[in-house]
Length: 328
Image 1 (cartoon, rainbow, N blue to C red):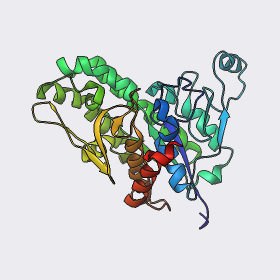
Image 2: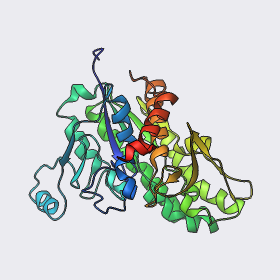
Image 3: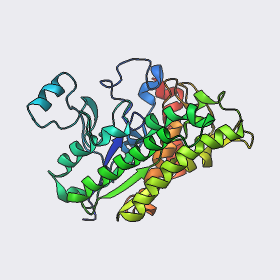
Image 4: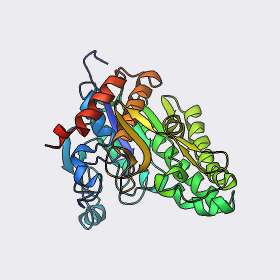
């Protein structure tokens, strides 16, 4: 790759990877930070602020088709760049409320549509990267049953199906883009969602729930062990390293995270002092720190020519988005 070339970054996933400034997918003014939305960034938007000179997510644009037009296009077998219609970086195929099935099937078909786009410029992707981060919509629905009855065959089938969709997406990319690095991100352990902290108050329940997420992690790690130019990003471990987890009795025991003078608790609210937004999506500081961790992963694990984001850059960006001057 030429010295001055950027690393192309594509994303498949759910609403935590959908750009927060996309007001087509999320037109409700209360979503993604509400009154603070303009200053509440998703992790790809953070990378665009801090590493646009090294990482190319494609131009910011409105594209794609939504129902009923998508149904009409599909019936005539006409090509659609992406679905549904949204305003986002061109290479971001994440969409609202996505489940693992949407990687390969349904009208969304994130992987086939992304690969069709990649096939137009194969050289771009010889040293590019695809991040796949999906699954919470599938696994979070299992927690109540899993807490009481671990190992239910129906729950195992959901986990195995999700891993299989990851595998199929990886295989599809590999057919025409053998050199593209693929990062497989596991699912956040939803029992630690700040909206759920009053539920499952015993060690046994939390341990039972964790088994589902452990099985999912094991499945993704198996893909990485088999397929060259892939890596595993442990989102659960990343979260524990910052905010912590529940205690040995299953009760909340989370820490406060400091970014400069800003103190961020694991709690719910649109202000940047909360880890999660009111609409149950990752907050500003969560996304800034997650973007920092992902860029470090691309540099240290994937071996891509990107510069890690420093703590000073993190603090500077957060300060610029949370001071009174930023509100003007």
